[in-house]
Image (cartoon, rainbow, N blue to C red; front, top):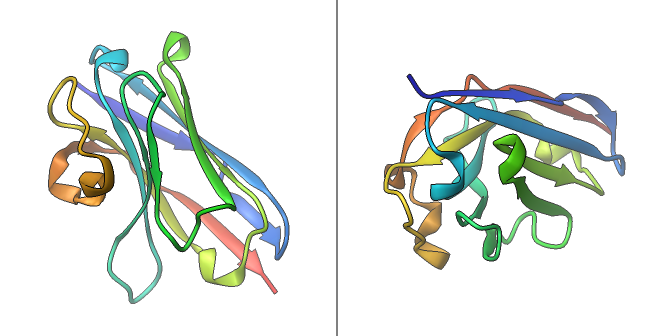
Length: 129
């Protein structure tokens, strides 16, 4: 059974930083790309960032580019999302997602939710103004 467990969310003031973590079990972590998505109240889920199996390629949504950075530690089966210069509009539940196909990487198309088959339970990030 594949499990994804996020942590690191919380309440932070605008301009602050947080680092989210997502630990994966039940699958060979270093064979798969990983993604981060978020969903704010009353809004649709949106793509945030993705990283390929090796960590050598990443893709970030324009809304977070230059402020957020996705990374991974394959030895720890963990993917991270470092968030800096946070804004109130970053407030959302953040989810990590596990790519469905081993070795796949679609570059700028990695934002498609259909490319992922397992999701974490989410962690709340609240940015106060």
